[in-house]
Length: 147
Ligand code: RB5
Image 1 (tube, protein in one colour):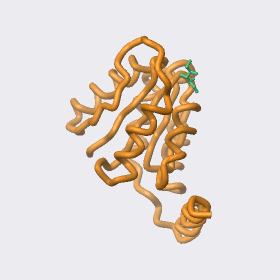
Image 2 (spheres, protein in one colour):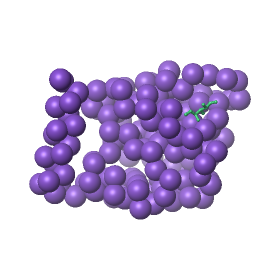
Image 3 (cartoon, rainbow, N blue to C red):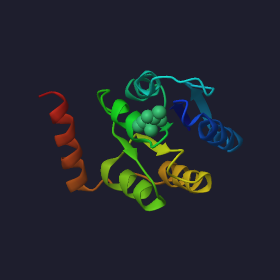
Image 4 (cartoon, rainbow, N blue to C red):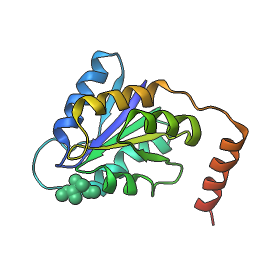
């Protein structure tokens, strides 16, 4: 799978570790930064990773910050993005099945690295349910974007 990744200074260690794991598993990663402890603004990095997803240049996006909150809020401002902040595997599975989430967000300060890796696998390996009620609700989310 082709995946965009981004983070702020609060999560560059997790981003690098997850990137390495995914590359070993054969995924292609487009790394949108950041890559160090210098303070940066997470919206800049969220926008870069989310735009690749919205334009269809990658299959999925993964973003991280201290809590996963700020960077997910920013990613969700890009049209077509459904970015889900997940803190456990159940959330990751359900957001794929029900929301057809195209981006995953996690927090380095709030979730352990092994849990994050399990969340990533659940997110990438769970297909959308294609359920009629879920399709209708996602359509309604899309309609909000153009109101
Ligand atoms: C950065 O200090 C911190 O605010 C950020 O990583 C994130 O937790 C925001 O939601």
